[in-house]
Amino acid sequence: MQEDSTYFRLIRNILPSPFSIAVILTLLTFLLALIFTQRPENAVYPYPIKILEYWQTGFWELLTFTMQMALILVLGHTLALTPLFNKLISTLTNYCSNSAKSAFLISFITILLSFVNWGLCLVFGAIFARKVADKAQANGWKLNYPLIGAAGYSGMMCWHGGFSGSAPLTVSGKKHFLVDQIGVIDISQTLLSGMNLTASVLLILIVPTVFYFLGKKSIGSEINLPILEKTSDDTTAVQGAERIDHSKIIAGTFGLIICFLAIREIYTTPKGSGLGFINLNYINFFLFGLCVLLHGSFHKFLIAVQEAIGGAAGIIIQFPLYAGIMGIMKYSGLGAMVSLGFVEISNATTLPIFTLLSAGLVNIFVPSGGGQWAVQGPIITEAAQTLNVSVPKAIMALSYGDQLTNMLQPFWALPLLGITKLKAKDILPYSGLVMLVGLAIFVSILLLF
Image 1: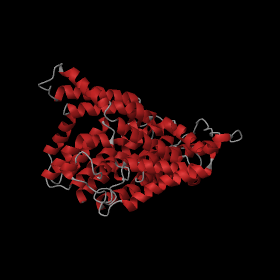
Image 2: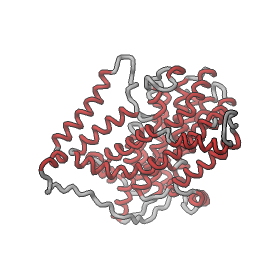
Image 3: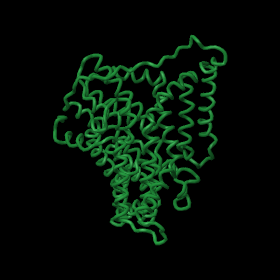
């Protein structure tokens, strides 16, 4: 596919920065709520002011979840910077000699990692893509770098079906907000179901193949990127208590204790509870221990954390904007209206499909699996119970829709863009094409199961 085609020119001309997109979506949500929802009878102020109050209320409602998401990203990035993972990435670049091979391998590895942890997959894919570009620049061969960047982002279309998926992990907890309505749903019914495992296999097989053929048909260009400087780890001046920061024994012991506690939970969880203990806090806790252990010292761990924190800046500063959008959609009833609109035209066969489509639409405005579940979860699960549709299937349909339109919503691409020095308008033409492939896979799976 030629990058000077009308399709590429259109995408690149209409896309502003991710922060501007968040502001535009905020204004659009405000207008939609003003037009399609009703002013509460007990409202004291004019409805536009009331909607702004909804926005202000929502602005602060996801701070806990924001911290969880930021930690997942920072710790995933920190893990990717360990010598073990760095060596792995350097080894893998030996198999990347052109755009097609590079795009295939990067997307394949990224998707595999997405089932483990979305933060790890995103950062690993970004670092992998950047190292491939550095290699191409050093060797003087041409590369379709935007395609490579999109391949590194492709795991974000698969993550919600993995072990860091917000909605499946949330409902597996004993105290989730819908427990009285649907009970506790173990991940054996969602993430480890035959439907989701089949979808995962298809994604692993088909998406990298699509990237390979896109690479075959594309024309590369010479790479001109600034050389990455290695962080200094000078220990010559270490003395006194500073030796604690550089001690492999102390860091190893501390990391092992955390990993032991995380692994111990597997064996101490009551029988019959399945893997319900795997939630966002558990994953962050385990990642924390692995990062300390594999970096080998507190000093190296903290250096990596400092480097990783920059990638979370977009989440920290933009998440409140999207939380505000969620506030408008939740308190004005706009989010419920979107979900109900799809539910009203659904039957037992089409409900999962319309759930996927509505989740994909809402995700553009609220790019947060957990936040989106808070808005749509009650409506989707009630509709599933009314139409006698499997609630776990409805949850996964929402998960598929949420992750699908990440290929259009550049919010989660911010860390990758920072590492690769690409722009959102560079990768979205390719990720948009891959989104159509994902849509075909998810719709087929929901119809077959």
